[in-house]
Image (tube, rainbow, N blue to C red; front, side, top):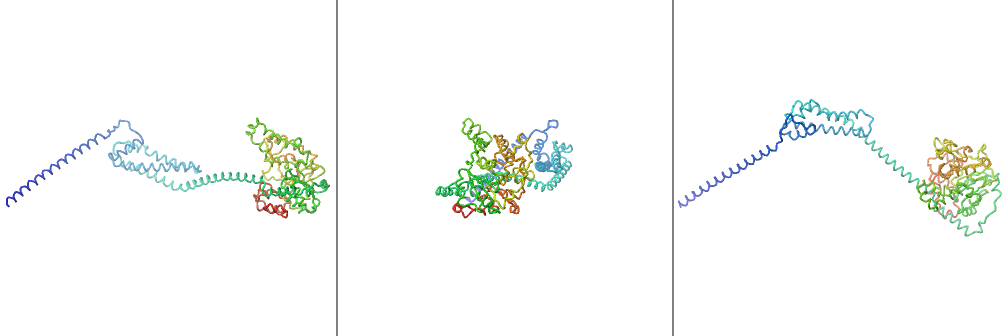
Length: 561
């Protein structure tokens, strides 16, 4: 047993000694490895260090020097970190000041002094590192920085930063308001453009509505023609009445293809006349509507014993292309349309030939007013009424007005610079410029009393023909009847009191109701005719109260009146 114990102890002691020897060998190995790694790292650092810059070598300037110093700041001088921060702060405020200066220039501020301050401040920030007292000591030195110089540099930068912040704080609200104003102006301009487009679209839509035939009006015309076809014996032609040529009576001329409108004109005259049996109406329409017009006034005779005749334009044989320049021009335009060699030429023109196709501008119904003495040779005076008027008072006083040798009695429409001759005639043309005054006051068709004897004496129809021939190329005026009327009756028109004729109910919503109620004649000139859906509601009832709602065809055709 004793031998076993000793042997066991001896074997344990030998194992412990071998362990100690192995442990110290391992430590020596690890120490040797770390020493080699340290030596290798130091060698790499030494070989990778850039060469020392000599004072006599050429130095990079400005930002390059600054960037180089920044990378070596930690190795060279702890004050350079502080310089980096100061320089960055100065650069940030330079950017801010320049931004406000740019806003000031963009907004065109009246305060040029502030703009100059911003520019000077930005320049002072940029030039601070170039000052002789700072450049060699802080930006062009390889040694340690002078702490006193750095402290002075920092103080100047902070002073400028403080001033920049105070200036920006004072100006920020002003600049923000200026930006808001600019944005508001941009918005107003954009909305104005949209409004202009909307007005153009609205005017186009209104024009289309005015030129279209409402379903109810078309229905009425068809019903009247159907009645004529169904009962021809009831609508035989009658002999002309002697009253139609009696110059002692009050004669009216109404030229229209709208039967309901003519009916309203006639009814309004008769209902407000003191002696309706002395009034004679000469209604002229086109060939398509003459039958329906005759049926209407046969079914609904004029009240009060007034007299009425209905004729077609074609009943006046002198109205042909050999006598009427307008018809000659229309025929010429039609001939050009069918000439192949003219097709391309006409397509590149200003569209004036297309205007000849406008049924409103070229309808002989609109130009019949220039042939009144030839149409009614035995009359001395005649009152021309448009089909879109309503008569509210007795009109016999117009025949008693002394026209003092003038041909046309009409209400003038000019006010200020509006509705002068210059707005209707082309005064760049020498013929117009030599003969007429551009500031002459215009007047209106729609209610005109004409002295037919003076008309013949002044040869007004010949004057109209001469000027219509001269305007074959549409360079004197655009297609319409008012410009040739202004020319034909130039210096031959007597102004009437404005209460005789109030215009604008077809486009102007702001006419005084007192002015309307005092007017003898109200005129729905414009696109918003009272028989259309686009009519203005505040004026429509003044027209609808004269519509003959008891007429069976009016009820059947559902007139929205």
